[in-house]
Length: 510
Figure (cartoon, rainbow, N blue to C red):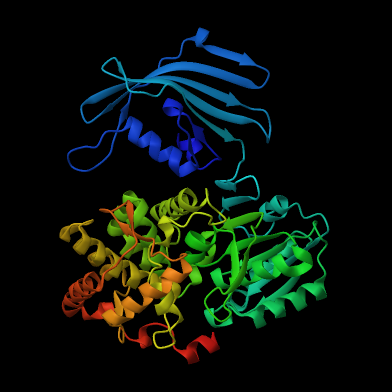
């Protein structure tokens, strides 16, 4: 299971149903095999399986091993009949397992057939819906001297790599990128572009198109590599979608928010008359997640990334929420760098995004868990009065939405208090000066247009799952806002003014 969890795609068929995706497989196995302990932890003890020689069947490069395994969890014993398939058949060889039955005290608990496959050297995650395929890799030291990982995955054969790079990333890491390219005898042709929200514009996209014309990438043999935060990769991806009706591209997100949020979806866009007013669905072939870049992030950008992690945790992954509760403050202090828990949080965040949007990359469904935190944030983020980073706006939205969920009875007061406390300790805003209950009422009305005439707002149901609501009454918004004001009286630092976020002058300088 450990080998499989982040190795490749998975499929299980318990009782005729289908569960797909790494995170979904892992969660299903946990629920199937591990019992909750009274203290809230989840733990299982495994007996060492006995494997008889006559239970091993080999053919060519594949070995099939049949065995039985006992698991003890919370005083309960579960018996598994397990079949392992182990392959040494080269890069395309596949290993996997099949659990043919699961029994508790001799009674079958329903896993008539459960299968999972892991390809050797496969990506940690993959999106593939029949129309597009994207492989997402988590790899440290992508740009270490002599590292061919990106070159091999992109199948660069022309001796040239074309990269659209965030200007700030180039300033901080340009020498590293040059040294890496030289070590591989690569010609590095660069397009250096601004990557702040103010530059998510049609003008910036046209600049990139002019640069693509200058560099003239071969139609299929020279995919464009976008290196930067979510804004840079969004605009670069849109330019690639437009140039010659689509040239292949790949991305290296360099911010925490880009790694846990923008690294998964296939939407590319620029702001034009409205946020993301002009865009397209255009999947990169590969996304490369490398924590190396986190070390040079400003603290505010790390905290903004936490806003997206917490959004995913609140409505989909209680364990992720618990990890952020216990370790988040420490990880913010060290920029999520060189830490096993940080790696796990990033993995679980990508898991969550893939589970929620991987099955609907084209957004044909309008009930989307990852729209949590986006019912009010669009208005807050686009209003120049507030000038918030994306993760900051999502955090304010998530706090307000959680309190509306409390008013509606979906979360308890204790759960809502815990949510606000974690946001407070992480340094995320719960509000920004100038926002009133009327601001939220107006935002709720505006988002209805974007969601095809209904609110369709995800709200937390407890911590770790969600429910959808089509109506926020004025009374519910006012009650939630009053509750939030009470919290801010005790913790005034959670109510920001714009000096704590961007200022127009700072943004232009960056």
